[in-house]
Length: 315
Image 1 (cartoon, rainbow, N blue to C red):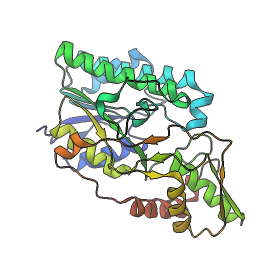
Image 2 (cartoon, rainbow, N blue to C red):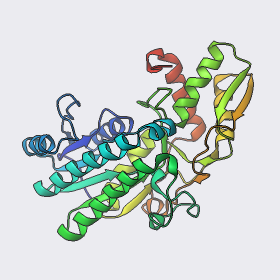
Image 3 (cartoon, helix red, strand yellow):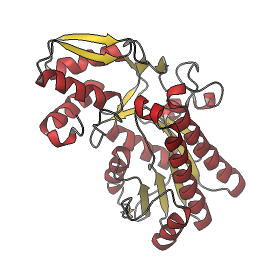
Image 4 (cartoon, one colour):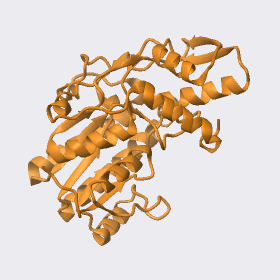
């Protein structure tokens, strides 16, 4: 069992949703959090800068939560940026961590890197067994390369490096931006607009049929720390083990928000992968389980979103 107490821990990407949740969870472990420099100070895409900063800060443990992320539209419009930025970020951090002898590294992948038509639920061994979802192929390729890099350093240099694959996340610190948001924040923004404009219709992209697994970010952080402590040197799915259709998700959100209009599904917009449900057998075998139900998490997130208009960037 790995112990973080007193260890110098760097969460690369600590200003993001998952990174911030990881920092809060690591503080409960009495870890010494290494201050994560802002992008203006440390551009993780620049190898020399990353090497110099890590040599001076000397973290004992590294969590690679830094990445360029976005929704379907952002991925479709900027594939070169998604693959180039993420390849540079992960390669610079992972290779430098190995060079400096970091005692443990945890790389964060994503459930969206599984083959589009892989059997459900998704087992870790299904990676690279079929074609990827085209709408986020560039991002997925970069994350797959990061996982392979982690595996290679573990195999060749016996590094204590592992990768985790979180499902769709939501909660505090999420991105509220019409162009770049993921499913839940994007739905919340459009739902808020429909309520404020007194619209008789609430339009939702796609057919509503795809099924997704959603996890509160605080549960995700807890699961990642648990996996890092108890399931070393393996690829581990991070999820709840339950999924829901987009149509049912919308029904819950409109109920929480008190919206009474008609829900209209825009079938001209893409659905993406038909289903994404993770097999979390490895996580469950280590006696971990989620604490926040989807309904409870959505209620908390909607309330926080409604109370803080400043979060609704470019709404």
